Image (cartoon, rainbow, N blue to C red):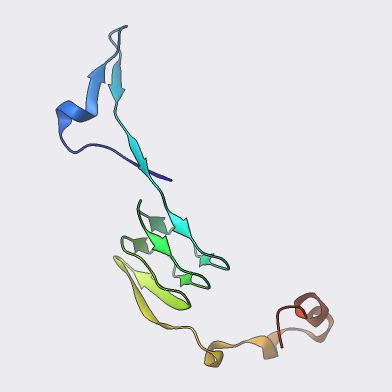
Length: 106
């Protein structure tokens, strides 16, 4: 969930029974698919759906949905391109580590 607040000041600010200032907030759901990589300093706004196998670049501000299997980045964040087999780095996995990825890598 991502919290937000009303834009109209009278709806946002209130005073409780003890005279303390209160703030009105509400939350919108965020849907994040499976196997998503979210790099550092990414902001995801409420109501956004991030698909499966997505990679979000560092510093992105996600304001709209991102489809499955895409590399996306920017401010605002946009799908840049699909992730394909051409992006594979499996040749860099050490032989002794392959057993840990065997279920996942063909």
